[in-house]
Length: 159
Image (cartoon, rainbow, N blue to C red; front, side):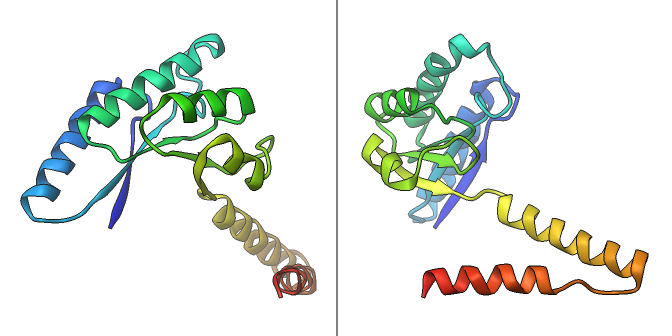
């Protein structure tokens, strides 16, 4: 069983305490809980760009000490920084799929252990639903062929 807990814009000490409590409760009840500590240092530009790598490394160490099992460095895309985090942190590194991120095989070579889609698949589907609704409202038609073709093509690629 696992959970993601994020720091957002709060000081990292807030997430440290949440991790400690989650770990304590899980241990008390005999639950083998994987705690993935998500840090928004990159995604939300919490510190200047020149300080991001040092800050995510610092937070990963804090979260590991608190009982986290993984660090989710949402928004990190630079291969050199990814490699440094993977080689510095005692926690397995999880990244968020996004534009500018290397291919999965390269990420694996850099040391990344998990790649998350985040909300991007749902956001795509919401966009497709919006297009269908707009087509229906504006023209009284449902333009499902574009979406069906895309999905069929995707399935054909995967066999």
